[in-house]
Length: 264
Image: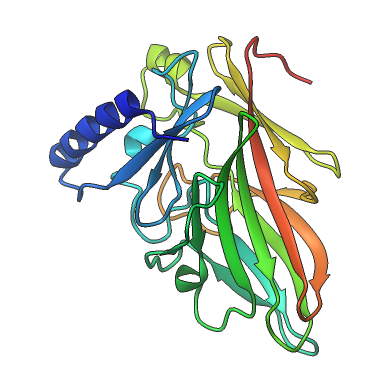
């Protein structure tokens, strides 16, 4: 699908102004759309920089206005991934895409919106190939990771954690501003778990995050450490599977707008 041009121009115009105002380096993004959502991905990381409903483009479910200040190592975004892995007889090892960022390896966007190999930014010694794709699946925005074991030993995946960085920060805002721009995030843990993101002022639309394929919400996990204040964004954690040599598994999430703000 072609980028939503008007949204792209508006975001590009706002980004440099924000960077100049706060003296942060400018970030480059590319804008996309589905029938329900307008969103932007950073060009270096392909992580989410903005997520707004078509029905109300003035509202951002993510901390998009803080994207310039949050572009550095240690800040997590939707589209990042952390993995807890071990080989037979070995100790658990942690890998993630955000602690020491490197540009991802862009892959051909064949029947997808964007695709990348996360290997360059996951850290040395990663025993899996990790690819990430953003898709428009019959009108639904999908974030999908493909884990492939190309080695000769089985790899146990203790946890695969996907940061859910929604703008639920209200500290430092005037009450009216917080009501208008912040969200509440409510996880429902379980095999058929989901996450509901509703606007603090109760106005529609709301956002529902659902599993894509075999991606149970095994736990809702706060970060082990915070990069800065107000960075306590939790992660959707899928736990407990093993990839034998040559095996692969897709995990991911689907982002669905609830026009009336309905909840389960």
